Image (cartoon, rainbow, N blue to C red; front, side, top):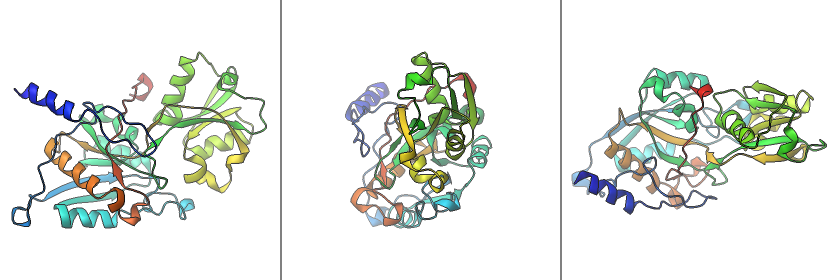
Amino acid sequence: MRRVCYTALLLLLAWIPPAAGGEPVPADRETALPSARPEVSNKEAPAPLVLKIAVNDIYCRKTACDCLGDIATRTYDTLLAELKSKYHITLEFTYFMEVFDLQKAVTTKQFDGFLCKPWTVLQHADKSNARFKRVADILDPANQALMSGVFLTLAGSPLRTLAGVQGKRIALGQTDSYEKHQAPLQMLAAKKITPSEQLLFSSCSENLSALMDGKVDAAVVSSYALTASCAVDFAKPEQFRTLAETAKMPLTSLLLDLQRVPLTDAARLQQALLQLSGDKAPQDLLGKGFVPPVSWQPVFSSASR
């Protein structure tokens, strides 16, 4: 009977609304959540739910670099207050400016969930014995939920297509970056393109600097690199030519550890976040807030484990 009910649930959730700028995608075991119980009257207020969440968000004022002070102005203050007052949900946020520190928090099992690039957490799940589920994706200031890795060369370069990277030097991210390392290498391998040299850097700024200094012929950066990273201080879009782009992936997701948080509570939080989004999204979120998680199943390479 339980199997039949679960199958029926997935059929009912067969399609989820698209993230802004994206196409509808089928719900699956990754994205589907049971329906939370209907809202109750004030006389039957739900039990308080308290979750500890680690945050690393490129648009958040408390986790972004100082050079992005005019861009990364997102705060979660209004959202947290409304979750508590309207839904009896308290999210205790701890902000991490350094991704490395947040990754350590994954393996030390300090938190119930994470609000960050999903790969930051998922790549360490096996080391923490966690079972992470993406509950929602948050839209960026342009109301987009997705990002990608972008292959760039200089505007005056003779390179015109990705095939031109064959036998050339390329700057990539470190192995813990999905859009700047894992995904682009998978793309190059699929097209049987072999660069002569791979230089690995820790940030989009370093990759772009290597390209501009002539150390490499092409560089892979996050799709937001020229608008929401420290590179905005010295690099302009017109200085570069785009050779190719990886498949889309979520930019920032809220993930919960189902070893610590019951599935019903995850669904309750998701419902509350979605109800506080769209036209009801607080202004300090810099966009329309949260959307259901777009299906994304990263390929785990041996280098990432």
